[in-house]
Image 1 (tube, rainbow, N blue to C red):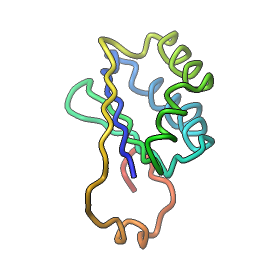
Image 2 (image 1 turned 180 degrees about the vertical axis):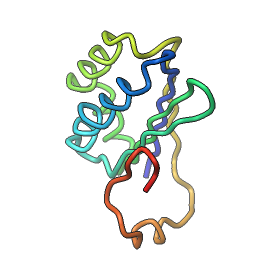
Image 3 (image 1 turned 135 degrees about the vertical axis):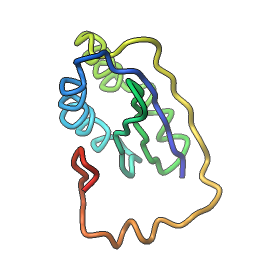
Image 4 (image 1 turned 30 degrees about the vertical axis):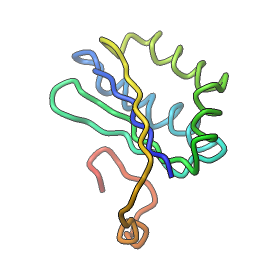
Amino acid sequence: MIVRVWTTDVAPGREEDYLQFANSASLEMFLDQRGCLGVLFLRGAGPAHAVCSFWSDAAAVDEFNRSPRYAATVRNILATKALVGDQTVTTYDVEGGDLTPLFHAKFSRLDRRGT
């Protein structure tokens, strides 16, 4: 499994616009990609945000990174001016751990409060 983390800052006052885009256009795009096992939209301190996606293998991540739909989605979110600064992408090979408790939880999608 591969974990792909995309980071960005959201412009002041544009949080709702970013979340709406993330939970509609971005969510659908990720879940339609071959090899995508799931995605989380994360908020850090201040303007910091991240998208953490889970992938079956490196080939699926490479295919995603080169997909026209991903490129179009990035263009569309940048066009909203909701993001500021640079965006970064880092990938990680999963070396261990256990998500069993997560899969036994009583939810399929998280809302903005994490419930």
